[in-house]
Amino acid sequence: MPRLILVRHGQSQWNLENRFTGWWDVDLTPQGEAEARAAGALLAAKKMLPDAAFTSLQTRAIRTLHLALEAAARVWIPETKDWRLNERHYGGLTGLDKAETAARHGVDQVKVWRRSFDIPPPAMEAGSAFDLASDPRYAGIAIPRSESLKDTIARVLPYYEAAITPVLRSGATVLISAHGNSLRALVKHLSGISDDAITGLEIPTGQPIVYELAGDLSATERYYLAER
Image (cartoon, rainbow, N blue to C red; front, side, top):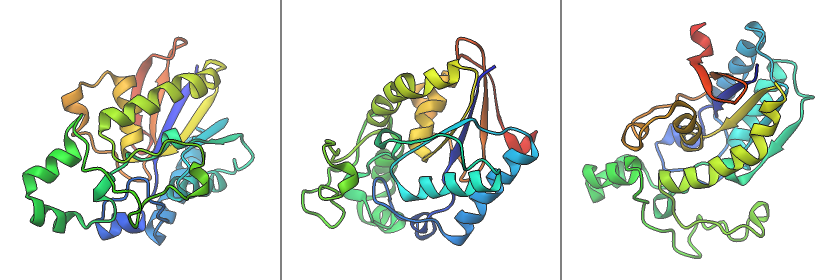
């Protein structure tokens, strides 16, 4: 039967610095690299080896995938990168320290920006330090100025249905290395989690989440691989 494995990228430099990251391209820390290798070693130890992989266009997710596949001796499997698996775009909050932002705007307001389902953060201004308009990886893409979780789901799920489910229907084991919010989109869909409940779901870095799927790709079981 098909199987889907989700891995949030290992700790990034801005995770460590407690900054809003979104679409900005930040690399892994040494700890993040170790988390990625550990995820791959766990896949090998549990004999849960992927047949195909998908990731975003962001370095932290791509490198997590590559380090995990190297540790699992699966670097040769087909790999697809797509912007629709990118992290949620944090708009004008990008690059800001989360604690300083809370002190400036209030804890309640920042909680709304971070955890509401359909309220996006303030839009990023054109030409700002973190504007990606000139980034060649996004040529021809309408880069959002800000996204809510609802907005993120609206791009992740159609991509999942169009690109990933055909691979799963072949009976393959698919690994997705992505981000907290793009993975929340998939977990919400597969586990039928409500709009309110999904905003409180925490997805730890570098910990493989396994979905056992039926032939129609409905989820029969969800678990952290480390707990099996």
